[in-house]
Image (cartoon, rainbow, N blue to C red; front, top):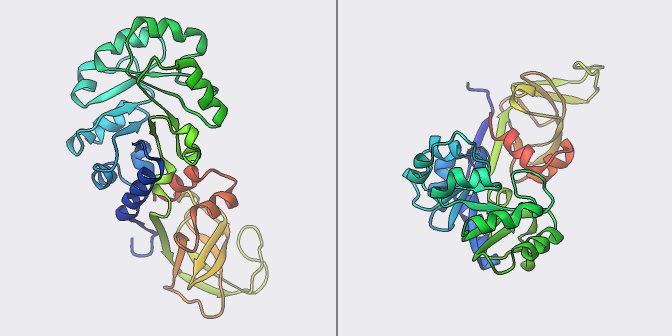
Length: 300
C-alpha cells in the first residue's frame, strides 16, 4: 500500500555489529536468530553473518527447519526448547543440537549430540542443580550453557560444571561487556540488530489544531496522521519529521496522530525507528524491553 509504513533492514549493519562483537569479546559468537532473526529475516541474516559466527541459536527446532537454515549455513544450530515429538533424524539432518535438561529428554535426543542446559536462576528450560549429576553421569556432554542475566549466575554456572565440560557459554547481549562472563562463547541477540532497522511512514493528512482532537481530546497547534496503529504494534512515543523530534500523541487501530511544525506537509516522511529515533528511546517510552520494541516495529 502506497501510504503504509516502510521497513528497511540494513544487513551490512548487522554484519558490522557481528564483526565488532567478535573482535571485542575474543571468543566464539553464536548468533541468536530466533523469532525470524528478531523480525529481520532469518535466511537473510544468516547469509550476511555466516562467516562471522561459529553457530546459531533458536528457541524451537521448527524455526531452523521451516526457515531452511541448513540450506544457507553448515554451522550447528542450538535449539533451546525442543519438544518431545520432534523427529531425531530430522534434527540430525538439519544439524540441530537440542538442549536437554532431564533424563527423559536425554534418552530421546542422545543421538542428536545434545547440549546440556543448566538452570542458574532463570527457572525455565534447564536442569536444576539438584539433578545435574544424574544427567552428567548418563552422558558425556561436550557443551553446556545457561541463560544468565547477572554475573553471579555465570559464576554459579562455572561452579556447577567446573572443568568437566569443554565448551561453556552463558552470556547474551547484556553480559558481553564483562570479560568474566564470556567463557568459551557468547550468544548476542539484540546486540546484533541495533541500528540495523529503519521504519518510516508518510504523513497522509495535516491539520492546524482547533480545539480538542482525537479520541483522547488532545490539543496541539498542528498535527498530522500516519497510517499505522495498534494493529501494527505501534504505541505512543517518539518520532522524527524533517530532522526534528516529534511525538506520536495518540494511536488508533490503523492510524496515529503525530505532532508537527509549520513547515511539515502531507507526504513528508515520519521516522518511527532509525537514527533520530533509536530503539532504546522507543523502549523507554513504551516501558518495554528493546527486544519487544524491535519485534513490534519490525513485523508490519
